[in-house]
Length: 410
Ligand SMILES: Cc1cc2nc3c(=O)[nH]c(=O)nc-3n(C[C@H](O)[C@H](O)[C@H](O)COP(=O)(O)OP(=O)(O)OC[C@H]3O[C@@H](n4cnc5c(N)ncnc54)[C@H](O)[C@@H]3O)c2cc1C
Image 1 (cartoon, helix red, strand yellow):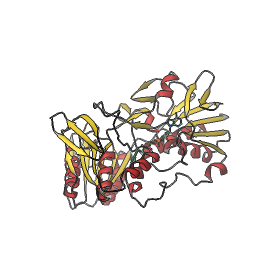
Image 2 (cartoon, protein in one colour; image 1 turned 45 degrees about the vertical axis):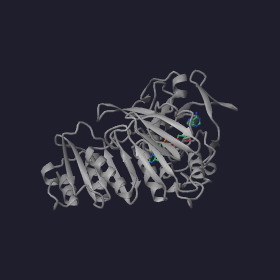
Image 3 (cartoon, helix red, strand yellow; image 1 turned 60 degrees about the horizontal axis):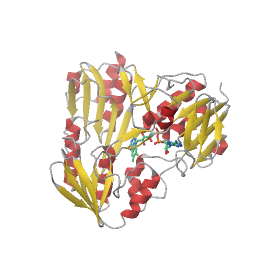
Image 4 (cartoon, helix red, strand yellow; image 1 turned 90 degrees about the vertical axis):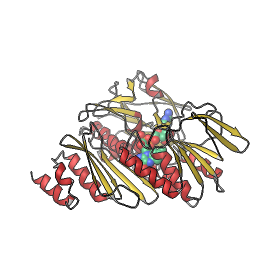
């Protein structure tokens, strides 16, 4: 077993990995280095409850304050790692150099700014870190007109939260539908109707060309020549993995740090987990980079188990959730080579429903709106790769528990 592990990044992946190493019996030294000054906290609330004016200063912590000391984990906060030298097995921060036997990169991702003229230099907000939320909340002390660039999960969650706080919200998406990268057209239509019914102005197929600060206002000019004026602009146009340290260390990169089923990079002493890595998937026969809490946490546990001599492969069923207004979307699986889709329930606002995605006879993914039973059963069926008769699902009277029981009995 190794003597010292250094983990860079004290977010969901890094923090879980430090804890899982100890719970798996790792006796060596563990140093967890994070460049944020706050103790490790849950990130998803940032675009949801944390935007509320009366939210506590920090979202819930990932581990109690006393956890790290009790478990003999050295937690270094507010320390930025500037480089990694794989030959000397050293990590350099702005103030010191540390030596590792095993290094774990859990550096996450950061918001991607689209190449829109004027955007780099103008006043704008992103939501990735707690400090971003503190800045944004200072700017939103009175009701304002907020322009949001990007109709993905972060853009939509932010739109819902700010609309509920009394701001006027206009959201701009370049593609012809919302959530086009991760959801099927039925769900995109659902979320568009949901937001429009609430009063958020949704502009799809609208590409931002230029952003200008004009006094207190922000002007957005689109490719079609339209102009919109707001008080603030928030960017939610996707993320890019933090790979600078890995690139300088000479690791193999593609859409993130390339890792095998045990999250090992091209250097056997360096592992990468969470948003920053791109993992080969046997099931889907291609590499996947996911941005979700489940992925970061499961990969962290995979690495910890591997380092403690209890190897397990990273589980193959990803899951994700988003909360907007009183709607919870839960998703399990990956929509890979989908050939059939079954919708149970009516996919319009106000209704619970689920969408089941098949590749031929094989259930690949389930999306459930306010229907955790469908989500839980669908997830089990996918995880266990159980046979699901498509025709049976089409019957609205079918009890999903019975379906699971008969699939398990086969
Ligand atoms: C606003 C928002 C809402 C989200 N909502 C959901 C949701 O509802 N459901 C869901 O499943 N997922 C959600 N996610 C995604 C989820 O939070 C991420 O996938 C998850 O945090 C990834 O964990 P990670 O450990 O890879 O990275 P992170 O949790 O981002 O942690 C990485 C840490 O590494 C630090 N770091 C980077 N470089 C260095 C360096 N050189 N030196 C030191 N430290 C460094 C970063 O500052 C950061 O603190 C959301 C993300 C955001 C931003």
